Amino acid sequence: MNNQPNRAADNMQKKVTRKVSVAVIGAGTAGQNAFRQARKLKDDVLIINDGYWTTTCIAVGCMPSKLLIAAADRAHDTNHSAEFGIHASAQIDGKQVMERVRAERSHFANYVKEQVESWPAEKKIAGRAYINKQGLIEVNDELIEADKIIIATGSAPFIPDDWADKLGDTLLTSDTVFELPDLPKSLAVIGAGAIGLELAQAFTRLGVEVTLFNRDKRVAGLKDDDISNKAIDCLTRELTMHLGSKINNVGTQTAADNEGSAAFIDYEDSAGESRQWQGDYVLVATGRRNNIAALGVENLGVELDDKNRPKQLDKKTGKIDDLEVYIVGDANAYLPLLHVASDEGFSAGSMVCNNNSDAYIRPIAAPFSIVFCSPQIVNVGMSLPEIQADPELEYVIGKVSFDNQGRSRVMGVNCGLLHIYGCKKTDRILGASMVAPDAEYIGHILAMAITNNMSIKHMLDTPFYHPTVLEGLRTALRNVQRMMEIPYQYHDTQEATF
Image: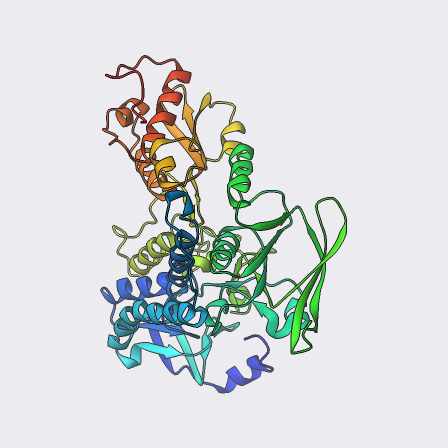
């Protein structure tokens, strides 16, 4: 966007083609919510978008990845049922797997597309926006003056310098991997965050030979060492992982069968030994970066740090200092999660129209993240390092292992560990970290408890049905209660696990 020469000279000869109260740049989750909300209060609202008019979640994120995981889970259950006396082998049609991912993705996308198509044509522009030094928005052949601007341009996969050139067509990201016409034979995944773990395990379960590399000797960004170690223990039963490895070079070379090119990775393993991986593709899952660096926001006085994050962002509103500019959703790189982007878009759309009663970003009482690998990895509330850094907090850690938990063992998914961090002074939950079967549900219950300021006692007053995986949550809560040395009476002193 900033490679267009003589902008200033061109603009001197251009006239403003339209004036609007609000211009929304970007039509993902945050941008669409902002546009819808602003239109309730103002007639002259415009939305500008470059690329697809759906959302990151639908197009390249949450939904296609979960569709791939669903297929992988079917294959895994079929291939690993011998312990139940059921002997079978999954016949995997890679083309059909990928076709279903795209077909179902289109199904979800159609709902958004229908809504976008219902918007008046004069209210939307398809094109790449640039904010010039006069604060005007340049897009296509228009020059637009907006009283207020909402920036919701989303994010894109981060690719290390020169890797795209070196790897060429063998490079994949989460934006391109779902376009594969068939399952590859082999795949390297770089990065053991949420995207890397989910896709590495899914492709492994679908018969792809996967090797996962990560610079750190931990996974999913887990900050509780015991939980990270347990996650590694559970996941390495299926996944080949080189943790603590250092990648020195990547590239392509002639394939072993002399047909086409193969990717290679030169790396040092955790012991410092030089090694090389070769295979079909390299999937780079090293995170995402926001898309505002080339938008021209610096012309409005917005300063960005070395990761393109706005320095002057008000996290309660998305507003930049005293400017009439709001940066919301993944574009502000604060918490790149769909529900956060949705809230931020709604808030900005309300605030720009002076509807301050609805202009807010809900304070996140319980930060919440889920990795949908198996077992799932969940963090809720404060992390252990955050708690340990606060000298005012007296905390205990309630624990439960899922290795022998009743329902987990029945289902053959008994690997995991849950830590609940409890506050001794308040009898409240500060946070939790876990790798566990059905962890998404445990996490939701804990997030609700933290958000609603529930005490450990009140949580234990809630019935826990037998036999369920959630009985493991009760065990951990009881452990917290005992460690706090706060008297609590309950009917049975022995947990009915079996």
